[in-house]
Length: 364
Image 1 (cartoon, rainbow, N blue to C red):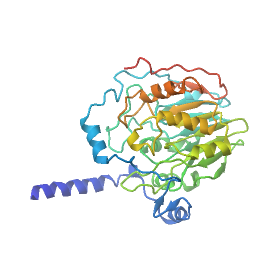
Image 2: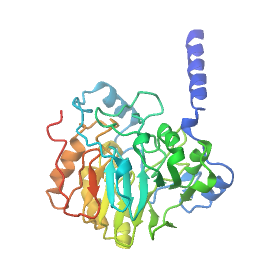
Image 3: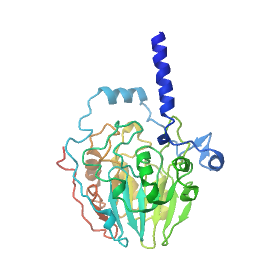
Image 4: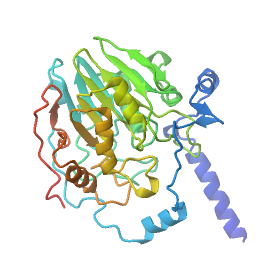
Protein backbone atom coordinates (compact mmCIF):
# COMPACT_ATOMS: atom_id res chain seq x y z
CA UNK A 1 0.00 0.00 0.00
CA UNK A 2 2.86 2.37 0.85
CA UNK A 3 4.49 1.60 -2.52
CA UNK A 4 1.22 2.23 -4.38
CA UNK A 5 0.63 5.50 -2.56
CA UNK A 6 4.20 6.61 -3.16
CA UNK A 7 3.98 5.86 -6.88
CA UNK A 8 0.63 7.65 -7.09
CA UNK A 9 2.12 10.68 -5.35
CA UNK A 10 5.11 10.69 -7.70
CA UNK A 11 2.82 10.52 -10.75
CA UNK A 12 0.69 13.38 -9.44
CA UNK A 13 3.72 15.52 -8.63
CA UNK A 14 5.36 14.71 -11.96
CA UNK A 15 2.18 15.61 -13.86
CA UNK A 16 1.83 18.86 -11.92
CA UNK A 17 5.42 19.87 -12.63
CA UNK A 18 5.21 18.90 -16.30
CA UNK A 19 2.01 20.86 -16.81
CA UNK A 20 3.83 23.99 -15.69
CA UNK A 21 5.73 23.87 -18.98
CA UNK A 22 4.97 26.94 -21.13
CA UNK A 23 3.53 24.74 -23.91
CA UNK A 24 0.33 24.39 -21.87
CA UNK A 25 -0.21 28.13 -22.02
CA UNK A 26 -2.03 30.02 -19.30
CA UNK A 27 -5.62 30.47 -18.26
CA UNK A 28 -7.07 33.94 -18.90
CA UNK A 29 -6.72 36.35 -16.00
CA UNK A 30 -7.02 40.03 -15.07
CA UNK A 31 -8.58 42.38 -17.61
CA UNK A 32 -8.72 39.59 -20.19
CA UNK A 33 -10.83 37.44 -17.86
CA UNK A 34 -13.07 40.40 -17.06
CA UNK A 35 -13.71 40.91 -20.76
CA UNK A 36 -14.50 37.21 -21.15
CA UNK A 37 -16.99 37.37 -18.30
CA UNK A 38 -18.86 40.15 -20.11
CA UNK A 39 -19.32 38.01 -23.22
CA UNK A 40 -22.90 36.89 -23.92
CA UNK A 41 -21.40 33.50 -24.88
CA UNK A 42 -19.80 32.98 -21.44
CA UNK A 43 -22.08 31.50 -18.78
CA UNK A 44 -21.57 29.49 -15.61
CA UNK A 45 -17.82 29.99 -15.72
CA UNK A 46 -17.19 28.84 -19.30
CA UNK A 47 -17.95 29.53 -22.94
CA UNK A 48 -21.11 27.86 -24.24
CA UNK A 49 -22.13 26.65 -27.69
CA UNK A 50 -25.25 28.16 -29.23
CA UNK A 51 -26.98 24.77 -29.23
CA UNK A 52 -26.84 21.97 -26.68
CA UNK A 53 -23.57 20.15 -27.38
CA UNK A 54 -22.87 17.01 -25.36
CA UNK A 55 -19.30 15.76 -25.11
CA UNK A 56 -20.53 12.32 -26.15
CA UNK A 57 -23.55 11.17 -28.12
CA UNK A 58 -26.29 9.54 -26.06
CA UNK A 59 -25.54 5.85 -25.50
CA UNK A 60 -21.75 6.23 -25.53
CA UNK A 61 -19.34 6.44 -22.60
CA UNK A 62 -15.70 7.45 -22.31
CA UNK A 63 -14.86 4.08 -20.74
CA UNK A 64 -16.41 2.29 -23.72
CA UNK A 65 -14.63 4.52 -26.23
CA UNK A 66 -11.25 4.01 -24.54
CA UNK A 67 -11.79 0.24 -24.46
CA UNK A 68 -12.72 0.28 -28.14
CA UNK A 69 -9.68 2.39 -29.06
CA UNK A 70 -7.18 0.38 -26.99
CA UNK A 71 -8.36 -3.19 -27.38
CA UNK A 72 -10.32 -3.49 -30.63
CA UNK A 73 -8.80 -3.74 -34.06
CA UNK A 74 -8.98 -0.59 -36.19
CA UNK A 75 -6.87 -1.19 -39.31
CA UNK A 76 -5.22 1.48 -41.44
CA UNK A 77 -5.57 4.31 -38.94
CA UNK A 78 -2.30 5.59 -40.38
CA UNK A 79 -0.81 4.98 -43.83
CA UNK A 80 2.16 2.67 -44.25
CA UNK A 81 3.21 4.47 -47.43
CA UNK A 82 4.66 7.95 -47.46
CA UNK A 83 2.00 10.47 -48.51
CA UNK A 84 2.58 12.12 -51.88
CA UNK A 85 3.35 15.82 -51.71
CA UNK A 86 4.73 18.82 -53.61
CA UNK A 87 7.32 21.13 -52.04
CA UNK A 88 6.27 24.54 -53.32
CA UNK A 89 8.78 27.31 -52.61
CA UNK A 90 6.64 29.66 -50.53
CA UNK A 91 9.36 32.30 -50.35
CA UNK A 92 9.31 32.89 -54.10
CA UNK A 93 5.54 33.12 -54.65
CA UNK A 94 4.46 36.47 -56.17
CA UNK A 95 2.56 38.39 -53.49
CA UNK A 96 -0.08 39.52 -55.99
CA UNK A 97 -1.20 35.90 -56.62
CA UNK A 98 -4.23 34.69 -54.68
CA UNK A 99 -3.48 31.17 -53.55
CA UNK A 100 -3.59 28.57 -50.80
CA UNK A 101 -1.06 25.89 -49.83
CA UNK A 102 -2.13 23.10 -47.48
CA UNK A 103 0.26 21.56 -44.92
CA UNK A 104 -2.03 18.66 -43.93
CA UNK A 105 -4.70 18.47 -41.20
CA UNK A 106 -6.02 22.03 -40.64
CA UNK A 107 -2.83 24.01 -41.34
CA UNK A 108 -2.53 26.12 -44.46
CA UNK A 109 -0.96 29.24 -45.90
CA UNK A 110 -2.92 31.79 -47.93
CA UNK A 111 -2.04 34.79 -50.03
CA UNK A 112 -5.03 36.94 -50.78
CA UNK A 113 -5.38 40.62 -51.74
CA UNK A 114 -1.66 41.13 -51.26
CA UNK A 115 -1.51 39.84 -47.68
CA UNK A 116 -0.13 36.63 -46.20
CA UNK A 117 -2.25 34.54 -43.83
CA UNK A 118 -1.26 31.45 -41.86
CA UNK A 119 -4.03 29.32 -40.38
CA UNK A 120 -3.64 26.95 -37.38
CA UNK A 121 -0.02 25.97 -38.14
CA UNK A 122 1.24 22.69 -36.68
CA UNK A 123 4.67 22.10 -38.23
CA UNK A 124 6.52 20.38 -35.36
CA UNK A 125 5.52 16.86 -36.44
CA UNK A 126 3.52 16.21 -33.26
CA UNK A 127 -0.08 17.08 -32.32
CA UNK A 128 0.20 16.40 -28.60
CA UNK A 129 1.74 18.04 -25.53
CA UNK A 130 3.62 14.78 -24.92
CA UNK A 131 6.66 14.30 -27.19
CA UNK A 132 6.32 11.75 -30.00
CA UNK A 133 2.84 10.59 -28.94
CA UNK A 134 0.91 11.78 -32.00
CA UNK A 135 3.47 12.01 -34.78
CA UNK A 136 2.56 13.14 -38.27
CA UNK A 137 2.18 10.57 -41.04
CA UNK A 138 5.16 9.82 -43.23
CA UNK A 139 5.46 12.42 -45.96
CA UNK A 140 2.98 14.78 -44.28
CA UNK A 141 5.52 16.98 -42.52
CA UNK A 142 7.60 18.36 -45.38
CA UNK A 143 7.32 22.02 -44.28
CA UNK A 144 8.85 23.77 -41.30
CA UNK A 145 8.96 27.34 -40.04
CA UNK A 146 12.06 28.15 -42.10
CA UNK A 147 10.04 27.53 -45.28
CA UNK A 148 7.56 30.29 -44.45
CA UNK A 149 7.79 33.95 -45.45
CA UNK A 150 6.87 36.73 -43.04
CA UNK A 151 3.20 36.41 -42.09
CA UNK A 152 0.88 39.41 -41.91
CA UNK A 153 -1.88 37.61 -40.04
CA UNK A 154 -1.59 34.43 -37.99
CA UNK A 155 -5.18 33.17 -37.61
CA UNK A 156 -6.03 30.66 -34.85
CA UNK A 157 -9.41 28.91 -34.68
CA UNK A 158 -8.98 27.50 -31.14
CA UNK A 159 -6.33 26.37 -28.69
CA UNK A 160 -6.32 22.57 -29.10
CA UNK A 161 -2.87 21.10 -29.72
CA UNK A 162 -3.63 20.03 -33.29
CA UNK A 163 -4.41 23.67 -34.12
CA UNK A 164 -2.18 25.69 -31.79
CA UNK A 165 1.28 24.17 -31.55
CA UNK A 166 3.75 25.67 -29.09
CA UNK A 167 6.92 24.66 -30.94
CA UNK A 168 5.64 26.06 -34.24
CA UNK A 169 4.45 29.31 -32.66
CA UNK A 170 7.75 29.88 -30.89
CA UNK A 171 9.59 29.39 -34.17
CA UNK A 172 7.27 31.87 -35.89
CA UNK A 173 7.57 34.74 -33.39
CA UNK A 174 9.93 36.84 -35.48
CA UNK A 175 7.86 36.33 -38.63
CA UNK A 176 4.36 37.25 -37.41
CA UNK A 177 2.76 40.66 -37.64
CA UNK A 178 -0.66 40.22 -35.99
CA UNK A 179 -2.30 37.25 -34.26
CA UNK A 180 -6.07 36.87 -34.61
CA UNK A 181 -7.79 34.51 -32.18
CA UNK A 182 -10.76 33.97 -29.89
CA UNK A 183 -11.25 35.54 -26.49
CA UNK A 184 -8.77 34.21 -23.95
CA UNK A 185 -6.40 32.59 -26.45
CA UNK A 186 -4.23 35.70 -26.33
CA UNK A 187 -3.16 34.75 -22.81
CA UNK A 188 -1.20 31.84 -24.28
CA UNK A 189 0.52 34.15 -26.75
CA UNK A 190 1.47 36.71 -24.10
CA UNK A 191 3.02 33.97 -21.94
CA UNK A 192 4.95 32.88 -25.04
CA UNK A 193 6.41 36.36 -25.49
CA UNK A 194 4.12 38.05 -28.01
CA UNK A 195 3.43 41.74 -27.45
CA UNK A 196 -0.15 42.69 -26.44
CA UNK A 197 -0.38 45.06 -29.41
CA UNK A 198 0.13 42.10 -31.76
CA UNK A 199 -2.98 40.36 -30.49
CA UNK A 200 -6.51 40.76 -31.86
CA UNK A 201 -8.89 38.74 -29.67
CA UNK A 202 -12.53 38.56 -30.64
CA UNK A 203 -15.89 37.17 -29.61
CA UNK A 204 -18.35 35.66 -32.08
CA UNK A 205 -20.05 37.99 -34.53
CA UNK A 206 -17.41 40.70 -34.57
CA UNK A 207 -15.69 42.42 -37.49
CA UNK A 208 -12.01 43.12 -38.00
CA UNK A 209 -10.92 45.61 -40.66
CA UNK A 210 -7.55 44.53 -42.04
CA UNK A 211 -5.24 46.13 -44.60
CA UNK A 212 -5.99 46.23 -48.35
CA UNK A 213 -9.79 46.40 -47.85
CA UNK A 214 -9.87 42.93 -46.27
CA UNK A 215 -12.48 42.25 -43.60
CA UNK A 216 -12.43 39.28 -41.25
CA UNK A 217 -15.72 38.40 -39.58
CA UNK A 218 -15.76 36.08 -36.57
CA UNK A 219 -18.59 33.54 -36.52
CA UNK A 220 -19.60 30.67 -34.22
CA UNK A 221 -18.53 27.06 -34.41
CA UNK A 222 -19.85 24.11 -32.41
CA UNK A 223 -16.87 22.78 -30.55
CA UNK A 224 -14.88 23.25 -27.31
CA UNK A 225 -11.47 24.42 -26.13
CA UNK A 226 -8.77 23.84 -23.54
CA UNK A 227 -5.12 22.83 -23.20
CA UNK A 228 -5.24 21.32 -19.71
CA UNK A 229 -7.89 19.89 -17.46
CA UNK A 230 -10.09 23.00 -17.78
CA UNK A 231 -12.40 23.14 -20.77
CA UNK A 232 -13.98 26.10 -22.52
CA UNK A 233 -12.09 28.91 -20.76
CA UNK A 234 -11.11 30.25 -24.21
CA UNK A 235 -13.30 30.75 -27.27
CA UNK A 236 -13.32 28.73 -30.49
CA UNK A 237 -14.00 30.60 -33.74
CA UNK A 238 -14.72 30.24 -37.41
CA UNK A 239 -14.04 33.12 -39.77
CA UNK A 240 -15.41 34.77 -42.89
CA UNK A 241 -12.55 36.28 -44.91
CA UNK A 242 -13.90 38.93 -47.25
CA UNK A 243 -12.06 40.95 -49.89
CA UNK A 244 -13.57 43.22 -52.56
CA UNK A 245 -13.54 40.21 -54.89
CA UNK A 246 -13.83 37.01 -52.78
CA UNK A 247 -15.38 35.42 -49.72
CA UNK A 248 -13.80 32.43 -47.99
CA UNK A 249 -15.20 30.51 -45.04
CA UNK A 250 -12.48 29.37 -42.62
CA UNK A 251 -14.27 26.74 -40.59
CA UNK A 252 -11.94 25.58 -37.83
CA UNK A 253 -13.46 22.62 -35.95
CA UNK A 254 -17.21 22.31 -35.60
CA UNK A 255 -20.01 19.83 -35.28
CA UNK A 256 -22.93 20.30 -37.63
CA UNK A 257 -25.65 22.73 -36.58
CA UNK A 258 -28.00 25.48 -37.66
CA UNK A 259 -25.19 28.04 -37.42
CA UNK A 260 -23.96 27.05 -40.90
CA UNK A 261 -27.25 28.07 -42.52
CA UNK A 262 -27.30 31.33 -40.55
CA UNK A 263 -23.77 32.15 -41.71
CA UNK A 264 -24.76 31.27 -45.27
CA UNK A 265 -27.77 33.56 -45.10
CA UNK A 266 -25.75 36.46 -43.72
CA UNK A 267 -22.53 36.17 -45.73
CA UNK A 268 -23.09 33.72 -48.58
CA UNK A 269 -22.53 32.74 -51.24
CA UNK A 270 -18.90 31.79 -50.61
CA UNK A 271 -16.26 31.29 -53.25
CA UNK A 272 -14.68 28.61 -51.05
CA UNK A 273 -15.65 26.87 -47.81
CA UNK A 274 -12.84 25.24 -45.82
CA UNK A 275 -14.50 22.65 -43.60
CA UNK A 276 -13.23 20.02 -41.22
CA UNK A 277 -13.70 16.45 -42.44
CA UNK A 278 -11.79 13.95 -40.37
CA UNK A 279 -11.15 12.69 -36.83
CA UNK A 280 -14.90 12.18 -36.51
CA UNK A 281 -16.95 9.47 -34.85
CA UNK A 282 -20.66 9.04 -34.20
CA UNK A 283 -19.71 9.00 -30.50
CA UNK A 284 -18.59 12.64 -30.67
CA UNK A 285 -20.76 13.79 -33.56
CA UNK A 286 -21.81 17.01 -31.80
CA UNK A 287 -18.29 18.47 -31.99
CA UNK A 288 -16.95 17.09 -35.30
CA UNK A 289 -18.82 16.85 -38.60
CA UNK A 290 -19.40 13.51 -40.31
CA UNK A 291 -18.75 13.39 -44.09
CA UNK A 292 -22.45 13.65 -44.96
CA UNK A 293 -22.69 16.70 -42.69
CA UNK A 294 -19.78 18.35 -44.49
CA UNK A 295 -21.89 18.24 -47.67
CA UNK A 296 -24.85 19.72 -45.78
CA UNK A 297 -22.69 22.49 -44.32
CA UNK A 298 -21.31 23.34 -47.77
CA UNK A 299 -24.84 23.72 -49.11
CA UNK A 300 -25.95 25.69 -46.05
CA UNK A 301 -23.07 28.10 -46.63
CA UNK A 302 -23.97 28.41 -50.34
CA UNK A 303 -20.38 27.66 -51.24
CA UNK A 304 -19.30 27.35 -54.88
CA UNK A 305 -16.62 24.81 -53.91
CA UNK A 306 -15.33 23.28 -50.70
CA UNK A 307 -12.04 22.12 -49.25
CA UNK A 308 -12.26 19.22 -46.74
CA UNK A 309 -9.45 19.44 -44.16
CA UNK A 310 -8.65 17.98 -40.69
CA UNK A 311 -7.31 14.75 -42.17
CA UNK A 312 -4.20 13.16 -43.68
CA UNK A 313 -1.63 14.07 -41.04
CA UNK A 314 -2.50 12.91 -37.52
CA UNK A 315 -4.26 9.87 -36.07
CA UNK A 316 -6.91 11.26 -33.73
CA UNK A 317 -9.88 8.99 -34.42
CA UNK A 318 -10.57 5.33 -35.18
CA UNK A 319 -11.50 5.56 -38.86
CA UNK A 320 -9.10 4.56 -41.62
CA UNK A 321 -6.77 7.41 -42.49
CA UNK A 322 -8.24 7.91 -45.99
CA UNK A 323 -11.90 7.31 -45.08
CA UNK A 324 -12.75 11.03 -44.69
CA UNK A 325 -11.67 11.84 -48.24
CA UNK A 326 -13.14 8.67 -49.72
CA UNK A 327 -16.49 9.20 -48.01
CA UNK A 328 -16.91 12.89 -48.74
CA UNK A 329 -16.00 12.30 -52.40
CA UNK A 330 -18.46 9.39 -52.63
CA UNK A 331 -21.29 11.32 -50.99
CA UNK A 332 -20.64 14.49 -52.99
CA UNK A 333 -21.07 12.58 -56.30
CA UNK A 334 -19.24 15.39 -58.16
CA UNK A 335 -22.14 17.72 -57.35
CA UNK A 336 -20.06 20.49 -55.74
CA UNK A 337 -16.49 21.12 -56.92
CA UNK A 338 -14.04 19.75 -54.35
CA UNK A 339 -10.65 21.25 -53.60
CA UNK A 340 -8.36 18.33 -52.72
CA UNK A 341 -4.71 19.33 -53.15
CA UNK A 342 -1.76 17.25 -52.13
CA UNK A 343 0.22 18.69 -49.27
CA UNK A 344 2.20 21.58 -50.74
CA UNK A 345 0.22 21.82 -53.98
CA UNK A 346 -0.84 25.34 -54.94
CA UNK A 347 -4.58 26.05 -54.97
CA UNK A 348 -5.44 28.96 -57.26
CA UNK A 349 -8.12 30.92 -55.42
CA UNK A 350 -9.04 32.80 -58.61
CA UNK A 351 -9.65 29.67 -60.68
CA UNK A 352 -12.92 27.93 -59.83
CA UNK A 353 -12.26 25.46 -62.65
CA UNK A 354 -9.00 24.11 -61.21
CA UNK A 355 -9.11 20.31 -61.16
CA UNK A 356 -7.53 18.17 -58.44
CA UNK A 357 -6.58 14.51 -58.44
CA UNK A 358 -7.77 12.08 -55.79
CA UNK A 359 -4.17 11.80 -54.63
CA UNK A 360 -5.00 9.45 -51.74
CA UNK A 361 -6.13 6.66 -54.06
CA UNK A 362 -3.68 3.79 -54.08
CA UNK A 363 -1.80 4.99 -50.97
CA UNK A 364 -1.67 2.11 -48.49
